[in-house]
Image (cartoon, rainbow, N blue to C red):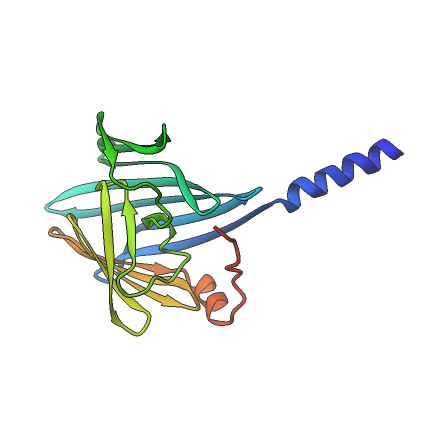
Length: 211
C-alpha cells in the first residue's frame, strides 16, 4: 500500500510539472479556407518549447500544397535550440537548425553553417502567438538568420517585415487572434478558431506559462 501511494504521488508530481497550451487558426484567403495553423506551447520542468505547424493548399494557375514547421526551446528565458522547414508540393524548400555551441549560436540554413551575432536570444518569432509585443521589439528569426523588428500600427496591432513580405498581428488579452500575411503571390489571414476566440475574449484562456 505504501508503494502504491508513493507511486501515485510521484505520478501526480510529474503531471503537475508539465503544462501545455494550444492555439488553432483557420487560414483564410478570399473568404475561403485554405488550411490550418496549430501552435503548441509546453513547459516541462521550466523548459518551454514552442511548436508551430502550418499546412495550406491554394491555386494560382497551378495547385500548391505548402507546409511550414518551426520548433524552438527556451530554458530560463534563453533560446537553446530550434529547427524549421518548409515544403512545396512535398519537396523541401528550406531547412534550418539552431543550437548553442561553445558559448555562441550555431545556425545551419540548407546545409550552410554560420554563426549568429547574438550572445543571448531571449525573444523569437515562435512566441508571437502567445505574447503581445511592443513597438520596436526585436525578435529573432532562424528562418532568415536575423532579428526582425515590430512596428505598432494600431491598437494591439503590429507589423513585422521580413524578406518574404509583411505580417500584421492583432492581439486580444495578450493572445494573437489574427495574422494578415501579405506575400507577392497572395494575401491571407490566420484567424483564431471561434471557440478559442470566445475563451480569449472571456478571459477563460489560460496564458500563464512563464518563459
